[in-house]
Image (cartoon, rainbow, N blue to C red):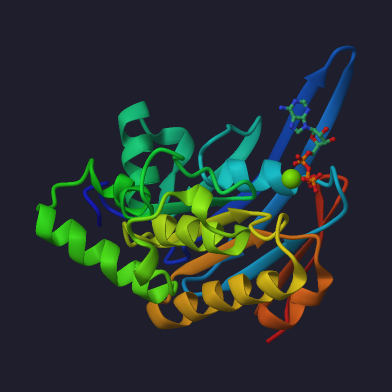
Length: 238
Ligand SMILES: Nc1ncnc2c1ncn2[C@@H]1O[C@H](COP(=O)(O)OP(=O)(O)OP(=O)(O)O)[C@@H](O)[C@H]1O
Ligand SMILES: [Mg+2]
C-alpha cells in the first residue's frame, strides 16, 4: 500500500463525504463548495463541468490535498487527507497523485526529459530506471524526438503532453487535471483528451478533470455537473 499504512473501509479510489468549503472575501463569505459527496471507482474517466465560479477548481484542489475543506471528509485510496501528518501528505501527493494544470507549469530552463523526470528525483530509483520510465512516457505521449528540447520550443499541445507525461511518470493512481485544455485550440484539445483517455484505458489510471468544453463529453464515462458549489448531477455516460 505505498508505505502509507493499511487502506480502510473502501476500495474506491476517491470517497468524498459532505464536504463544504468557504472563502472569506472581505465582508462576504463565498460558499465555494456546499455539502458535496462523491465516489470514484478505480479506472473512471470523469469530467467536472459547470460555469465559472461553480467550484470546480476548489473541488480538484481539495481532492489533491492542495487545500483543506471546512468540514466533511476526503479519502484518496483509503487515506483521509485530514488525518495525515505533513510528511505523509507530501508522500501521498508524490506517490498516488499526478497533477496537470491549465498553464502546464513546466520549468523553462529544463529540457523536456528533465521536466518529466522531476517527480522521480525524490524517489529511490537508479539513473537507468528513471531514464527508462521517462523515455517510455515520452513515447506514450508522442514526444520521443523532443526529449532534449526546452519547453519554449514546443507548441501548446506539445507542452501539455509534457505535463501529462510528468503527471504520469510516478505511476499515480489518480490524475487530477484542472482545465488541461483551456489554452488549446479545439483540434489539439481533442488530441489531449484522447491521449488522457488512452493512458486511462491502458493503465487503469483514474482521471478527474475540469473543462468548459461540452464537446468533450463524448470522451468521458462520467460527468460531474457543478452549480453554485453543489453537485447537481453525476451521470454515467459511456
Ligand atoms: N482563494 C480564494 N479566495 C477567495 N475566494 C475564492 C478563492 N478560490 C475560489 N474562490 C471563490 O470560490 C468560488 C469557486 O471558485 P472556483 O475557482 O472553484 O470555481 P471554478 O468552477 O473553478 O471557476 P472557473 O471555471 O472560472 O475556473 C468562486 O466564487 C471564487 O470566487
Ligand atoms: Mg477553475
